[in-house]
Length: 498
Ligand code: NAD
Image 1 (cartoon, rainbow, N blue to C red):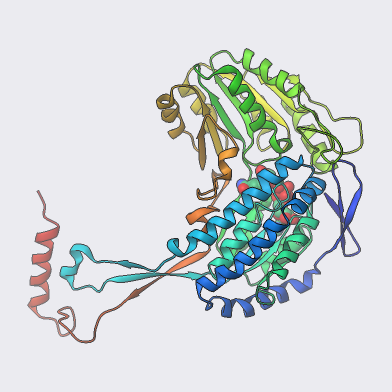
Image 2 (cartoon, rainbow, N blue to C red):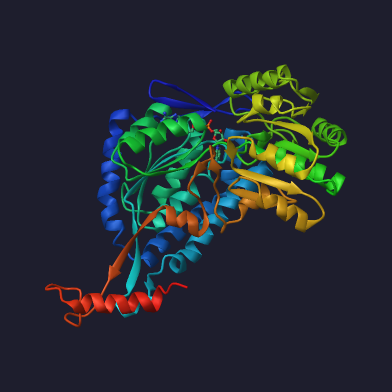
């Protein structure tokens, strides 16, 4: 976490409240200049052959891999994650995603010839599809995965020939500074990729600068503000916003194993993971599930990942914990029964006990919608249709899971859930897959990161049509009856009616 005073962002360890260091905030008036410099570098970068761009990116990837341990320490200290989580969920997942980009971009973005098929009888030339960068990508990031949510999209944007001006979250400025230092050390052209540091005002200035495409990761309210500003200027964007993920538990789900997985899926990253399980929708009697989840939550070790063996670290800031606690109270006021947690720890750091809430109806869920912290709500539904309707009743649709032994039934349920990503008998972990697209629908945003679909976000298509000079072109002036006769024959051949 951090605060800003006199042009400096102060970073703190959320597990201890101790200061970690300072990072200079970028003066607002400098931001158009940073974007201008990136543009000057980008026009030459776009002309650098892909193979050479990837060679430079490989150098950066190797620096990240070399510094993996330092990264895991910094993420643990600035964000408050257990080190294994920081290493697996952030560092290794980022390296994998970048490795995928280094290996697969040439194939995904190879020029493609698009033949004319039956339309060759219209004497059309074939097309050749090329991919061109947008120009300058303005990225606004968040803190919960300070490497994963920034480094892989930066890699994909640079690989595709764009320049990048990016704003790390003000809650993880030291991770942002280190990431930019690694990019500087990798020797990209001066100014091509630059971080601007600060809070919402710096983010706003970046979206108002001359960027060609925006990418926002964060909460819905701020995301929509940013999207509205960009839309007013005709600048496109992709938006990775909040989730409120359902887990549908079918009657044949194996009890112990599913409880273990759901506990991890709910409380991984202290529940501050956009794809965390937040709503457990049990088909049948929810009571045994709610009690088992509460028992498992009570057994979790909460504490400072820097000094004790723990499962769960702190929330990111005092404000985040206050907001979280207020949301838990609202869910209880709406009829939710607290079975585990529901209180902050009385010690330094922003700790909160993992919380399990049992609900008899949808009201507690509505009070929790979009919550970002260690809580899961459990409720029973009479049949799979009712569970699917409950899952789809949220305005959020980032990811979801279905739990059950019969994979055919589970698959049938999964296909009917509104979400960008649905897992069967799994949660959170599959999103580390380097090749699959990541992103949500409905209020959770649009656009995709990672894999081929992530690359496509950073390019526009250009079609080249080519033919030799001259040749038979019956559609040119002056018109004669020939054109109509030929078109009639063509229509009869290819658009025959029954
Ligand atoms: P946030 O919306 O408070 O801030 C996100 C970023 O936007 C920060 O860098 C912030 O400085 C900037 N910002 C805020 N207001 C702005 C404005 N008006 N103009 C420009 N920039 C502005 O979110 P947060 O607290 O950093 O992150 C938590 C949220 O992010 C949660 O809701 C979580 O679900 C979501 N999230 C989504 C994903 C995803 O991939 N879908 C991933 C992680 C987190």
